[in-house]
Image 1 (cartoon, helix red, strand yellow):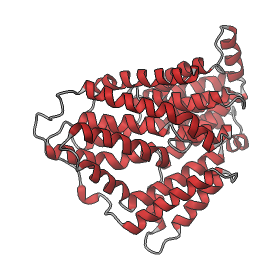
Image 2 (cartoon, rainbow, N blue to C red; image 1 turned 180 degrees about the horizontal axis):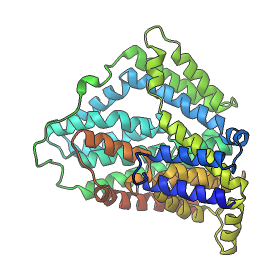
Image 3 (cartoon, rainbow, N blue to C red; image 1 turned 30 degrees about the vertical axis):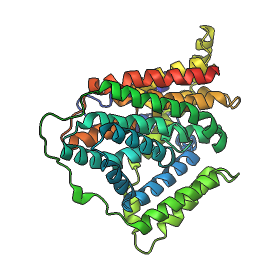
Image 4 (cartoon, rainbow, N blue to C red; image 1 turned 180 degrees about the vertical axis):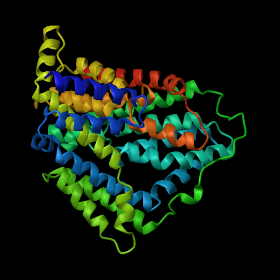
Length: 405
C-alpha cells in the first residue's frame, strides 16, 4: 500500500504541476513514468496492468480521432473557421457565432480537435483586421468546453464516464444539454461584460501563422467525414456497443482511394491515448492497495458522500483544477455506484464546466493558449482566470440549480 500510494501521489503531483524540475517531462511523460513505476515495483503485476486499461474507452477515443482527422484533412475545420472569421466587422455577432459553432462541433467531434483546428485560423484573421484576439480565443476555449459537456463523445472524460458507466447516449444528451445551453448563454454575456469597449487591438502585430499549412477544403473528403459523423451518432442510439460502432466507421474512413491512411493516422493524438493508458495503470495500483475504499470510508465518516450530486459537483470542480479534468475524472469515476445514473451525469458536466476555471483545467485550454503563443499572442494565467472564474461560477451555479430541479 505504501509503495502504491507514494507512486500515485508523486504522479498526480507531477500531472498537476505539469513538469518535474530538471527533466524535460510533460504530463503524459509523468503519467507514463508513474505507470512504469507501478509495474516495476510490483504494485501492479504486468498482466493486471494490461487488464486495467479500459480497451473500450481507448477504442472509442481512437476512432473519434480518426473521424476528426478525416474532417481536418478535408479542410472542413479550416473552411468553417474562415466562414466565421468573415463576420469580424461585427465583433459581438462574431463572438456569438464563434461560440455557438464551436460548442456544437465540440459536442459531436470533441473539443480538443475543434480548438486545435480553429485557433490558428482565428489568430490570423483577428490580427489582420486589428481586433483584440484574446476575448475571441477565450470564447473558443470556453464554448468548446461547455458544448462538449452535452454528449458522451464531446470530450475524453465524457467518453470515459459513458463507457465505464454504460450510459445511454440519448439519456445523457437529454440530461446534460439544458445546463450546457444555459452555461453557454451566460458565458457569452460574461465575455461581453469583461471585454466591453476592448475589442480593438492597440499594437499592430503582423500575423505569424503559416496559412499555407492549412488543409485546403475538399468537398468530397469533408462530406465523407460529415456523413460518417452522422452515421456514428445514429448508431449510438442503437444497442450496438459504442466502441464497435466507432471503430467500424473509422475503418471505413481509412478505405480511401485518394487520402493515404498514414496521413490520417499521423493526426491521432497518441499523447492523449498514452496518458489515458498510463493513468488507468496508476489508479489500478491504488485500487489494488484498497486506498480508494479507505478514502471513501473516511470521507463518509466526516459526512462527505460522493454519491450526493451537490457534494460530487464541488469535489469534481476542486479536483479538476488541481490535476486537470481528465485525471480527475479517472480518479473520481471509481467511487461511483452503477446506479443511480444522475451522479454519472453530474460528474461529466461538473468536471467539464470546472475545466474553464484556470488554464490547466482542461486540455482544450492548453491547446488554445499554446497555438495562440505560436502566433505571437500571449494569454497569461491571470488573463484566462479573469474570464474563467466568473464563467465557471455561473456554469456550476446552473448545474446546481439543474440538480435541485
